[in-house]
Length: 392
Image (cartoon, rainbow, N blue to C red):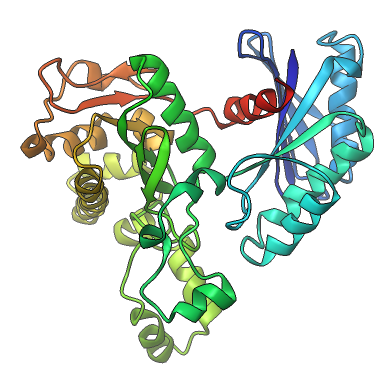
């Protein structure tokens, strides 16, 4: 059974076709610079990557090219072989606790929630509408990045601000990276053949979040009302004293928009190191004894440890810690230092296995009281699996 997984951005479109009988990726195509000059797309098929330059003025034209490529490459014989389409949607507010079949009412809701994710929901909708026009009879499912976190209790998602901010304006913790954390939760349960696990999932990339999961359900997560909160990230500050904002507005004569831009795009690893938001470059700076790179790395680890320690407490102990996403999957330095700081919880690192990059591995010894794993995330497959659940 073939299912499409779609991630639509403002000027990009990522489409993956899966064979769900064995959950394998058949083809992946990425369109870039949509609506701009010099448009191109990249095909990943049969272990080969092919870049093609071709004009496409909008998402609909890009999708039409994608469907043509499927036929021309003989990936499918006809479009009826595509049994479902899963669309990543960043924000479903607190209404959508599970993935949902897309109809006119759902489209209206996604549009309504755009004020909560103004950079993401509108382009997500562009992809939804374009596919509905070209494949009107194919099942379409919205897979929300916020859904997985809707199992949190209100004492986890309510902020200690005037309650009317929540009841009237929807100010609460929503959480993000939910599709990734959902995948990690399911995959570690498969690996250990146990659905009743207490898991701390560490999605560490340029963006980052940590989630406490019990028996497959989110208990708490570090990202909140927006993706700027929680741990320190590549360019985002994470949790800070909110009084810094009006103070810096007064000191610099910057507007709130300018200050928020600084906190979103020029803070985190980039802001502290002064070199880069890319941890590989930070690690290179550490080897050269760059003090600000060393400081950036230590701040990053401290914030990760703070959330892991807290989530271990509210879970009543942890069975598994999983590292995923770009940093989590590839940085043995960060994983190693985090695990070394967790020795008080009984974590015993397997130094050899911790050198693994980008593939599944257990990275603690059998004597470790908490098992730690690397699991590469796969949001595209998770989206396809959500569509399969509807079909089944």
